[in-house]
Picture 1 (cartoon, rainbow, N blue to C red):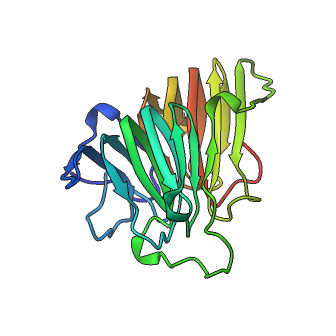
Picture 2 (picture 1 turned 135 degrees about the vertical axis):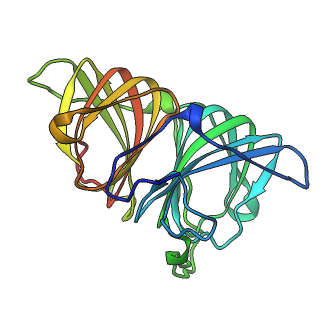
Picture 3 (picture 1 turned 45 degrees about the vertical axis):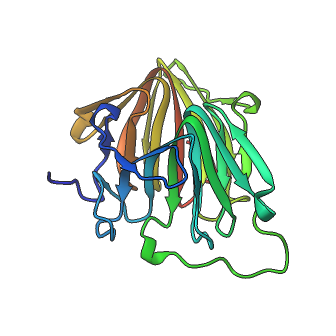
Length: 259
């Protein structure tokens, strides 16, 4: 399979994803699908190549998987289905139960353990190249805090469009919180928003149908459904459209304003 280079928009359909099942010595099931990687990732390249981001989908059911400390990257994820439990804090004393649509922020230096009941997530991490990761600077205070952003508590701002239709945005992780990634939820319904990607972006569809027009004279049309993943490299020109579409959007470097 010939993989696109790091300057091409890539659409990965959920139905085309290839899964790796891991053996868990303490029981349960864990599946992983690596989607966005660096070109020379030590584990081999994924179907989409990025110079900055790493992303994939993982599933947890009745298992417990610890992220070996020290954690040397920033990571965010959205729950796609089921329930995902994160144990974090000193001696894993804090338990977070996340449901579909919830977003978590896991900063460098935090400690966490994943559990779940038929839980699936789409995650994005920076830096994408594992060889570029370094430990967090030591401090005398507590480890960095994991943030849990509940879907039902998210507040959306409407985007006013002269061309008609509806679009809105909810800013979740801003440059005031992270210097590496910004995280937003966007909605698109019967609208058309033309833009040029100012950064590298990873997107997963949460609801509805997302349509992206790109290429020469916007001749390439991408129709993305639930759990489809899209990599948008910096500099790509595109139009966002949709039919009751809701998407999870992660960008590096972080955007100061929602697009």
